[in-house]
View 1 (cartoon, one colour):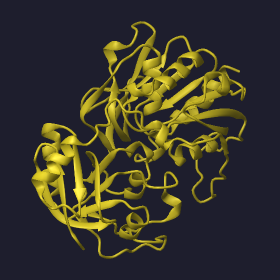
View 2 (cartoon, one colour; view 1 turned 90 degrees about the vertical axis):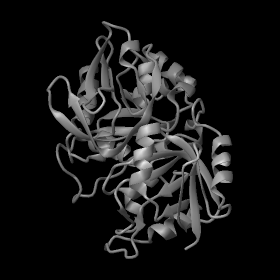
View 3 (tube, helix red, strand yellow; view 1 turned 180 degrees about the vertical axis):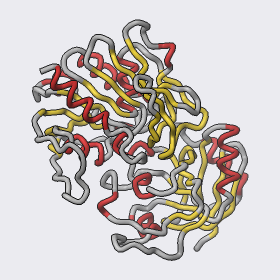
View 4 (cartoon, helix red, strand yellow; view 1 turned 120 degrees about the vertical axis):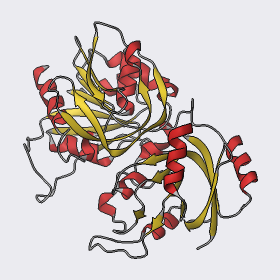
Length: 372
């Protein structure tokens, strides 16, 4: 393996070994606290523009297989780990992590002190950075990172959304099916800002025909499908930069039931008059504790976001806060007191609980049934 350097814009740098592709790549460094799920992380479109550091030290031991991908390709700008497993041991594996990153021309770096990096990011916040196997002068690389484009104020949704509408209808294999398998009955238009496939699977599983449209679809185009409900997906980047989707959501409020996840939650929050702000280092991982304020139950949730909707900017008396993050008390869910809509900041389809948050899809079904 080649020598590689990870250099942050503030001058902090790490020397390690490159794996995957060779070259140079830029992005904002964030850390993910999951113990597993590296393939799902790599293929999550919400990571567009970012390089991910895994806090768990041993990565790659179960390889890569097509069935576990959350989209058609990996989206991370770079991958940072403590140790790449030299052995792959899983009967489902189709290739190694190294081979996978090579296939999609993504740079990885291993052998660095990921604990030191994460402690630094927790102190100073997420930083722009560069990984290089070409230029090995840390000072020059830090200057390059400093001059690289920021993802703040940039619309990344158009880079990851589908380019034309399609129908998603996937039969759940019997060995993975569980719970209340409702007969598909209602039509949902899923607005794709970078959706994860498992969200669409969950919508199928919970009783929906799913028509997917790009995030640039207008309210008129969405309503032309005569949907029973509208789902707003996750996606990457700064939510304040996706003004066209905020306007679309604003026009859809009151027309049909809506459910939003992650960026979809932020779109609904802004459409209702709220403002978003950037967290210091975001929430990335599958072990975030969230309280449902109605039931007082705690859900172990999967999250991937750098921005939040600020609670005090939402119109008082119209919006109810339904979920709160127990680590930093940021808002994790809302619902409107008059219109049939609700949203959560976290990912209920990722099932780290494993089924703590699955009720949200059933809630969407019931909301639509109630509004027929």
